[in-house]
Length: 560
Image (cartoon, rainbow, N blue to C red; front, side):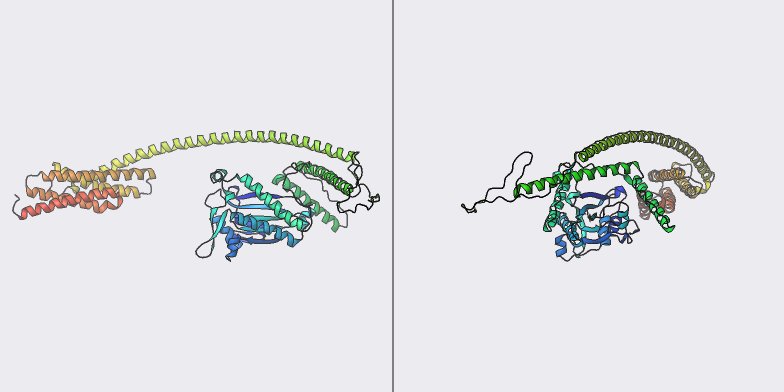
């Protein structure tokens, strides 16, 4: 009888997964992942029976088309978050009672239904167990389909190309779904499982096969014990042991000897799961026998009538179409063999095994919880130790940096004094002709000239490879301060010039002020802020305007 499996999971970057890699593996093909610059090649993978892209009906009707590589690269590039869900997979078990074409039609029908329901694109890959998997213990009837869906709805743009737009409704958070008047995602997944049950049962009913049931075994009243999750480490140990046993058997065959493969599990988890499986097979056999007893008993009641639990069941009365005077003939008693009921010993063994497994599971769970708690405590202690070490490292780095900055600051102050001293030694070279350097106006003009030379020195200081980054920052601040000083001194000098008694003096000092300010702007405007440039240009314009005003007054004979 077919079993019900319909489970879903997200393909997420947060788990280190890629939509392109997932599609490549499930379809058994080679795909280039353009986002990560990788090529995934699973073209040698066995067991892939078919792999097809299924579009929503609206896009298919519009003759839209997209290949697997383009589809899943678009799915990757549509997501920006580093933990984004890039695809959703539905895994369904395909009834072995159906033939290959019927299983494919069933998987495609389910994929098409979900593609239309959410407006997403499906990539349906049908797998069968390989001979290697069967030799390892897999069920040869395990036909199944991996159906990858885009997490965003698909539409056509103006160029008739498929684009991925908004998130599908099944990918929305519960809060968002609630605001839209929709049920939780868990309810949506339950609905999809029931959709699979309905579609699969319709196909099974067409061929008069037994139907599947989406309810859990517990809900169906069947006492099936779930196996323990093996995990990647235990699974690898089991596979490695099996491979070693195969090699030993092959070597013995080459030597003309017989070697019996050891099929006992390699791990404790494998041993427990083997016991659980044996117990489940026994319980399942009891369940099938009980069902057969009920079915046979029902047939016997309808056809013959016999005693069940001390109650006499007789042949049903004649139907209303029976002729009244025709004698009713009782059917001859049949000698059909009674169905074999499960023995009390078998049932007792099943129940005892179930109880033993439950006890073992409880012990395993307790041991696991203790181990996890111990591991958690160790990890917590290690984390605290790492955090303390990191705090100490940061504090030490801060202290070292503070000491280093203090040394660099002190060195800068010493270098700054040396720069100013060097410029001041050559003070006479900066005195303007016809200007008394000791006058109030002369001192202001001289200060601008000195600032020009100091700026040159700071530029050379900044370009020196031995100058540290901190010292460059301090030098930049000093240059900014000098620029502001030049703007202030220029304005003060102009005000002083306007107060001079003789026009000739005003003209001489204005010309000198123009020269030193113009020289400063020409030399250093590229290294100063824009607002400082504007302030200097404004001062320069004001000085020029005053110079023009003096010249005009002399031409009219107003000067002295």
